Image (tube, rainbow, N blue to C red):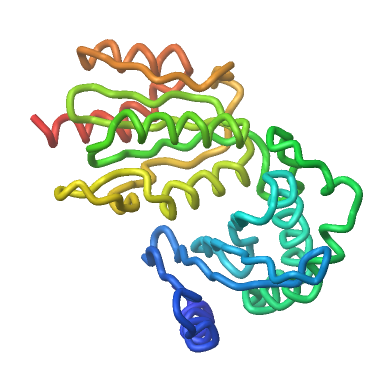
Length: 270
C-alpha cells in the first residue's frame, strides 16, 4: 500500500473521530482498504440526512477509482444509487490524488441539489442502477471463497439479493465445506458487491451474535474472455463430487480458473 494512502487513512481517522463516524473494516497489501464513514448532509427540506459511505481503496488507488457504496434509511435505493454515481463523477476529476475527504465534503455540500434532480424523486425501490463509465469497467468474472456460513439461509438470501440488485450473474457453489461465489458482471458492480459483503452483518459468530464477513478471499478477478460463457442468471448450486464442480467450470469456459484456483483448495482440505 502506497505511503500516501496510509497517510490518507490516518488523516481520515483523525478527521472523522466522533462516535461511530469512522470504521476500518479491512486493510491489506493485496486487497487494499475498506472502511466506512458515517456523516450527515442537508436534505430536500433542510433536514439532516444520515449517510453511510463505504469506500474500497484498491491496490492501484489513487490512480484508479475507489469503490463506493451509499446507504441511508432516509433515502430510497434510487436516490442512493444517484448519490453514488455523482460521487464517482467527482472522483474521476480527482484521479491520481487522495480524494476521500474531498468526496465526503462534496456530498455534504451538494446532497440537497443531487436529491432535487427529477430522476431521484421516485420512491421506486426496484429501480435499476445506472450504468457506470469507469475506465476499467466492462464485463468481469470474479471468484470468491467463503470460509464458512453459520446462518446459511439468511446468508444465501443476502447474496442472492445483492446479486439481483447489482445485475450480477454466476453461481454460489457448495461442495462439502468448500464455498465459492462466482460473479459475472460490470466490474464496478462487483466492487460494490464486495463492499456489501464486507460491511453487512450477514452471518453469526460462534455465540450466535450477528457479525460481518471477515473470512472472504478474492481468488481471481479478470475480464471475461471470448471463450467464457455468459451466465444468464445467479444460481445457488450444490455438488456432491469434485467432478461435478469441475464440469460446472468447464461448461462456463473456466477450466483454467478451476485448475489454478479451485483444485489447490480441495487438495488442502483433503
